[in-house]
Image 1 (tube, helix red, strand yellow):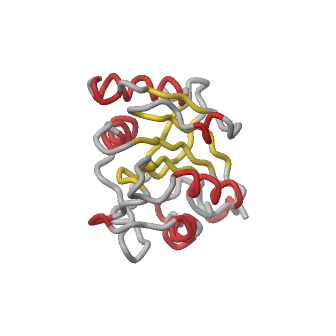
Image 2 (cartoon, one colour):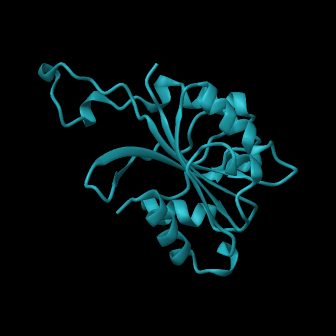
Image 3 (tube, one colour):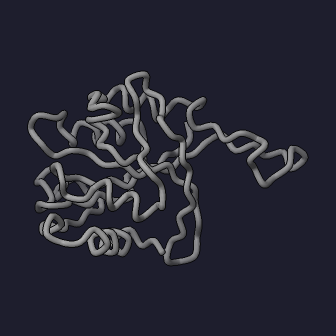
Length: 183
């Protein structure tokens, strides 16, 4: 199993989670539908402050929503992320040739958001499931509220922008980008 990495935005409705993801990645809406496939498989390039680059798949809707408000339970989210067919990059789109002997098995980096509302599945459950599946959670940032206690004591790198709802989306995106240490 290859190590997968996640950056997660956590928050209630209307705290600019999707806006921030679109601002960070330059992508439109990318969601999971009821068949656990992606509506739009956008892969973007991220550059860190230290100059390292990597490919990443962003999701603009919270995992608990999916397309058309279809709720994706934690186990289904994990099935989706582990589906090699969904994330395999066609050989024709690779910069390397067959003779290099390297065929990229798929994307391992994901940016997505989780709802922090009582009428949705608990975000802690999603995070715990990813950790059990040996994912590396790079960072979680809470928008619109202080980080929940479970996150504060989890050992995961975290931050909070409690006033995100009142700030312009570009300001929130700047703060998130800075915390993630992305250019």
